[in-house]
Image 1 (cartoon, rainbow, N blue to C red):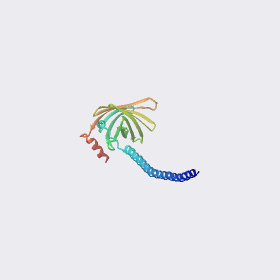
Image 2: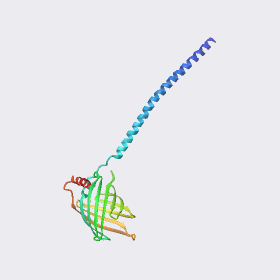
Image 3: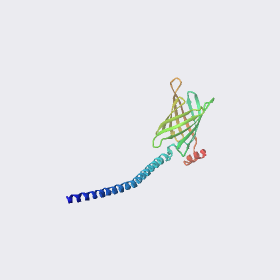
Image 4: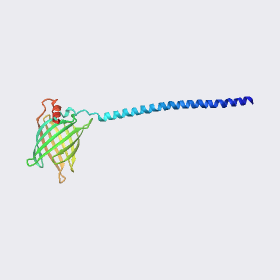
Length: 218
């Protein structure tokens, strides 16, 4: 009986000590977790910030400039175009713009009793042959274009002001290209304009292709 009482007493004394030890261990573990958790949270936030910065950097990175395959277009051009409206004398000036990310085209079509003028910005989507652009004219028209380039031929479809037309341009040489434009007439029948352009001026040296464009922008 005495041994039983002693055993109970010892058990009663050990239990609180064990519980206290568990509490100490639990408290220490909790404290350790509390120390680690902020570090983990901080590390997680830092990783997210780095990822966000990387995404922003990639999104804001300036694409590579347009390739040299467009250099032949830079310069001044003249041509004649036959259309249902008659024969027009064409003038065109092409240059690079905005760090060579776009090609800017200025055109003037003289029909004798009317002069049409337009300006367009065109480029290709990075990493693809898809062409995109916007066109503005003296009829206060704003047109959006998209298309593609295959070999020496580029095709773009333009839409705006309820009108839609497709422009086919084929490079014949560094100093000559042909142009065909098709659109639906008022009666629903396909209408067409055709012509050729010849280069009348070009940069003296290849590096002037960019230099001349930059000067004009200033």
